Amino acid sequence: MSRRELREQIFKLLFRVEFNAKDELAVQEAFFFEDEENRASEEENTEIHEKFERILKQLDQIDMELNQKTKGWGTDRMGKVDLTILRLAVYEIQYDDEIPTGVAINEAVELAKKFGQDSSPAFINGVLAKFA
Image: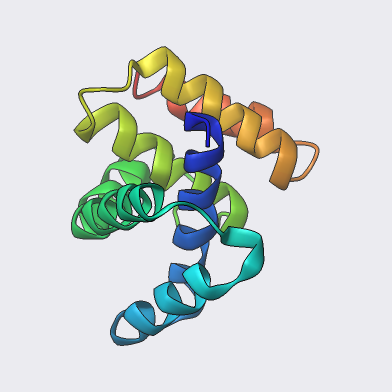
């Protein structure tokens, strides 16, 4: 599985955060890995799980940073897809030293093209430019 595909899997798993209570996320994660569409090797599943957990630990801080940088477009106002993409990208920019900022932004824009609305790529790019 490519790094892009792994990122997409993490995005899909992270998307569930918006629709489930924190105490239900372990069950949601188990459902995610049972889904045929999300099949990956044990090593890849471990990588997805570990990055998901690291993002969850930083989620409040990431949301705070997003709210500071997006005047008039707080996390409570953003579309769920855009918010999830931004959370993943901000995590990669701020907390993951293995991923260059430019790569994180480019990959976020690609996710927005695939999963977001027509205006999502420009919105994502604009918000993430404030973190670069």
